Amino acid sequence: MFNIKKRTNKLSENEELAKVMTASFAMFEYCDFGWMAFEDYHPNDILLMCGDDIVGFHLFIEYSIINYTVGTDIIWKENMDKYKNKKGLNGFIMGVLPKYTKKGGATKMIEYEKKNYSKDYDYIWGGAYKSFNNIEFWEKSRRLVGESSGSYDFIMDLNNSNESSKFKTDF
Image (cartoon, rainbow, N blue to C red):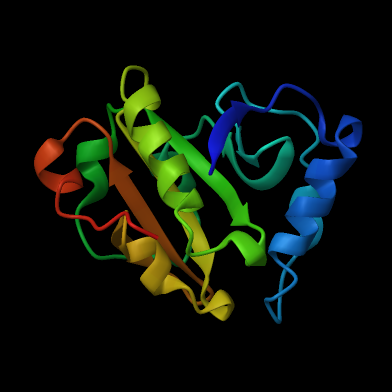
């Protein structure tokens, strides 16, 4: 039903992606659409396709979780020093159109990332606003490593099969 395609253009050049991004987050009471200003694409950005239609996305920035920790109110649940010399990829926004959720699309994207990004990166990390009330979603594929007043922080180790194998990714 789904396939993965690399994003190859700027947001302003892809009106369909902009619409999908907005619709994916319309269900949340609070969403800061400032991320729409992220015009450029990262070579690891992916689109979830159903036929010729974009139905989901995961956008990335090459950024260490260690750099992110400076000046924040995060309470860490584990010692993050082990990530100091590792290469991280920040999955800063992911979404699937509501009509396609819980049909395996997010699983397809996560499996793609595990297979294709473990050569160049040690982990993928990201945060989720607490107001989204979707911690259960992220805990299926990532480990909760930190919490701040407004968000949760998660990590998925790509090169540690013991950590990765315990997660449920059927969603």
